[in-house]
Length: 424
Image 1 (cartoon, rainbow, N blue to C red):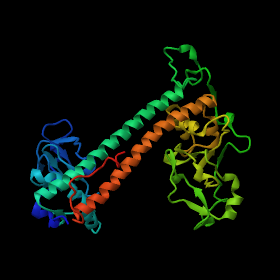
Image 2 (cartoon, rainbow, N blue to C red):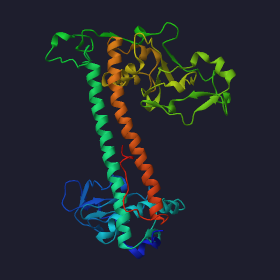
Image 3 (cartoon, rainbow, N blue to C red):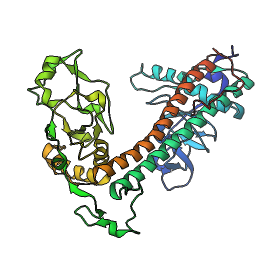
Image 4 (spheres, one colour):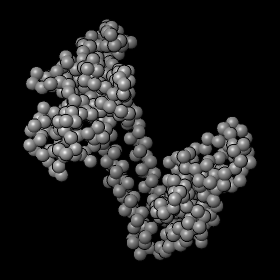
């Protein structure tokens, strides 16, 4: 077992509660120290102060940990330089060699404060609450080894998050090129500057010669209604829902790019047969049609076969011999299509879009074989992104288990840890 014991924060650190300076001494362009009132300006690790204060009251030193003492209680940051702190924060100060461990120990123990805060009328904690917080603690050598181990995982998490962000940025640029320039028969992006003869003018601007301007009805299936909303309230009401049966998707289930299956409601098989015309298939495109989420859309996967939608969702079906559903989904999420949706959604008495507006949307569509080439390129890119996302999830899981084991003394600090497999 590690030599971990629990100590009151007041015994291992100096606690300074923040105090608001005179408002007249704070400005964005004035002189003085950086000033933050609470955790609104917290970053991933360090704060981003917007104001400066010329008459400071309480000053946190560089390296101090900043603890939020007002809702949300328990958030943590670390001061980069001397910083004036307001009433929403406290500064936790320890010697330099203990800071790294204190960061992890405080983040692990801080949820206790949130539970204390919930018992008060105003969600906040006072100096006494902070000083009574119990933290895992040990000798300098053990604390240093634990901090090094957890810092290593944090560095890998930060690196992987940066890789994912970069891949998303690359995908956005790639998607724009695929939807405006397209891929020729050799799988190469067309160049409108070097080969202007490969492009033509259209109502949507310059597009490749092989492409056509069309709408949903131009690529509609022959065996299904191409666009429809879910059943009206009289056809599907709250009394129709049961504990288990056929899922019904609501507007909250349609997220940006995916279906969230949590909180799905159900109807009986008998009711589902009655409402069969409102069922969906994999490859259908689902649109949120009302409120702030108007235009948000997702592509139905195999789990969606036979599932129903409610009135707040628009279902779009296409002939797969004319259009790849994945390509259509990409089309409806590019800047041009979103502009059309945003233009139309405010035309009624309440924010939203309807089936007529969806059917009026125009887009540039390549031949199916070119769509398939583009989808393959996106799939290859997405596979790389998914690999990084999986690696990130493993790192978070590893840290969650390891920090509990190390900070409770359940296991000894290992001499080293092999993260190669986890980091892919």
